[in-house]
Structure formats: structure tokens, C-alpha cells
Length: 85
Image 1: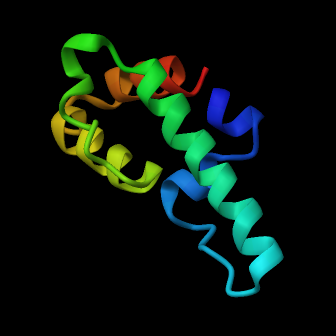
Image 2: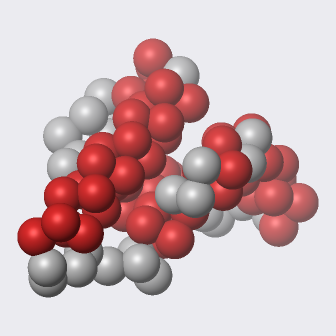
């Protein structure tokens, strides 16, 4: 819920895209950086190397999803709650 609570979930999922106009673009980039930071702080040090080269929260999320996305639905829900909470 950390990403949702801070209004960063849609940036992370790639559904809120970078705007073209400069004032809004700067704000969006700051929010994108904040989302990536929250993801990195939520991942254990043992797994951080998988996403440390990611430049966007969307790319980090996709890597984590590829690694853990094959789990059963209940476990996925638990992991999302841990990461987003």
C-alpha cells in the first residue's frame, strides 16, 4: 500500500505516463523517482541486485513480476501487499 498511499501505483504500473509539458514533467519525474526508491527500499538486500540497474519503477516492477509472477494467486496477493503496504 506504500505506492498506492502516495499516489505512485499508476506510475509504477505504467498507466500514468510522462507528460509532455515541462512543469508537469518535472513533477512526474520526481514521483517516478520516489516510486522506484520505495520499491528498492521494500526489496531485501539479497534481491536488490536484480533491480538496481532499473531506471524506472515500471522496469523494476516488471523484473520482480517476472521473478515472482509464477506463484499462485494467493501468494502474489501477499507479496503485493507486503511491497505496497
